[in-house]
Length: 293
Ligand SMILES: CCCCCCC/C=C/C(=O)SCCNC(=O)CCNC(=O)[C@H](O)C(C)(C)COP(=O)(O)OP(=O)(O)OC[C@H]1O[C@@H](n2cnc3c(N)ncnc32)[C@H](O)[C@@H]1OP(=O)(O)O
Image 1 (cartoon, rainbow, N blue to C red):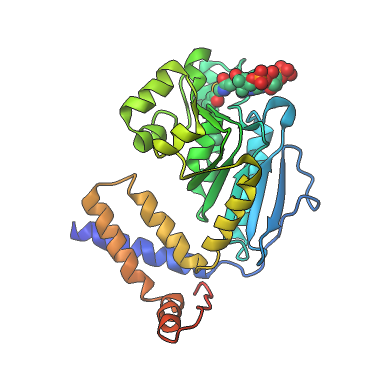
Image 2 (image 1 turned 90 degrees about the vertical axis):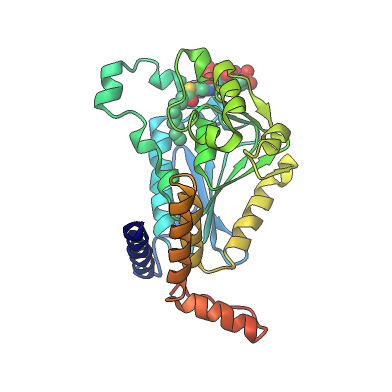
């Protein structure tokens, strides 16, 4: 166990050093500056520190095709490196966050193509992003759409949102977390019910079972998600990144190891200027000025 604690300390310190090395100015993406085909991007918020990525394939209810997933990964990587961005909001249209993987595109796939091409392996950039990602879900979040939302850190739902894993009706099973992340979040019985029947649950039920953290009138959803991003952005980007990693570890390890990781990461924050500044600002009764150092 001592070795695990040591490993965690090294990982936390490496993370701190890597974050400190991030460039202060990186490419900024806006909806007009880029020639996206399947998404839109913009930077918003009072401090211009919240990125909004909108899935934009309305005719197919934002079905996730290869082209869309490539653009999404590119935008996420760019915002991930942009030191001015504190949080990312991922959203869709009023009718659909995403109605799943593109059935028409994947229908011809064969078993050997899936195995040899490692189908879906490149589709998980959302889960690898170190910055907080908020899913703002209106309308359908089905199959890969529900899985995409679950890869985000926080899900806000519009009051007409619907979540489901309907793959079973297509003769397949979820492939990007529908049997795993969903089960960890809502428990075995509800996950089994959703995956084995393909039935959808509405926003209110999704909140009740802990899949979403808040239900908001559809027309206010994006604004509230951006506000949440702005609130997160008032804190140190560096410490937010560490905190996100610590929460995520809870899904991947035992309680004992998770608690050790948390303790060591907490200790690591004491080597940062932002921890010093945060506590000093409290003592001096003034707002903290974080520098992510
Ligand atoms: C982030 C990682 C993701 C990894 C993915 C891992 C594996 C995932 C597998 C899947 O997701 S399988 C797909 C699961 N989803 C579904 O089964 C839902 C399919 N869609 C529907 O059931 C319905 O469209 C709806 C959502 C209930 C809406 O019904 P409505 O009658 O309102 O609209 P439609 O006329 O059906 O649709 C409009 C238009 O959109 C096309 N479309 C909808 N969903 C998809 C889809 N998943 N793939 C491709 N195209 C889709 C639909 O075909 C219509 O277009 P046209 O045919 O009229 O051109």
